[in-house]
Amino acid sequence: MDLDGRALLVTGASRGVGRAIALAAARRGADVALIYRSRAREADAAAAEVRALGRNAFTVAADLADSAAVAAAVDASAAALGRLDALALAAGAVGQWATVADLPVQDWDRYIQVDLSGAFYTLHAAIPHLRRARGGAIVAISSIAAQMCQARNVQGAAAKAGLEAMVRVVAREEARHGIRANALAIGLTATDMAQVAFDRWGPETTERIVQAIPLRRIATPEEVAEVACLMLGPTFAYLTGKVLQLDGGQIIAG
Image: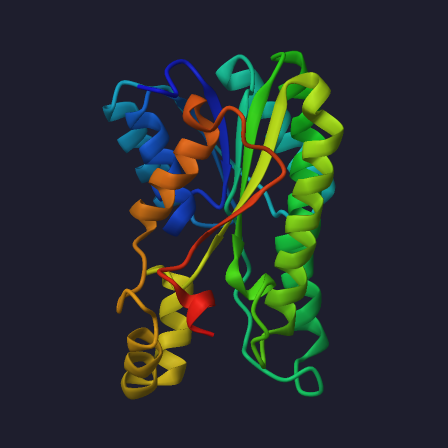
C-alpha cells in the first residue's frame, strides 16, 4: 500500500494505460480522479472498479485540447478527493502514420493539442494543488518515439519529445515545493491505440516488428501501470527529472 491515502489524478483514464494506472494505484491505496474525453461508460466502469477496491473515485469529462475545460476538471477532481498530491498524464491522441510531406495538418494539430498542450494545461492547473499538498509526484507517459528516429511518426516524436522536456522543466521548477516529475517512455503496448497500428500494418508486418523486440513481445498496460505507480511512490522518492524507458529493449535493438 505504498500509495496509501494519496489523491491521484489520471488523464486518459477510461482505457488503456490510463485505466491500468488508476486501478493499480487504487490497489496500492490511492483515491483516484479519472479524466476522460468521451468514453463515459468505460470511465464509470473503471471508477466502479476503484470503489470495489475500497477507494474513492471521481470521474469528469474534459477535452484536453480545451484549457478551460481542463482547469475545471482538475479543480473539480481536487474538490472531490479533498486534495491532489499525485498526477499521471496518460492521455494520447490517435493519428495516422505518414511522412512530414503527407501528414494532414489537422492530424498534426490534434496530436500536439492533446499530447503536448493538453499535458501543459493539466500541469498548469494541477501544480498549484500539488503545492498546497506540500509535495507530490508526477509521471507522464511518453513514448520511445521521442528517442528513436521513426519515419512517418513526426507528430508522435515531436509531441513526446516536448512532453519529456516539459517534465524536466517542471522537475527543476517544483523541486523546492517537494514535487517530483518524471516521464515513462514506453514501447509497443497492448492498447486500443496500438491495435489501430497493428490493423494497419497487417499480421505479418506486426509479427516482424514484435519479433525484432529483444524480449519478443509487447508490454501490457498493467506492466506499464506498475512501473508508473512505483515512480509515483516512495520507492522512487529520490528520482526526478528523468525519463525511464520501458520498451522490452526496442531502443537498444535499433
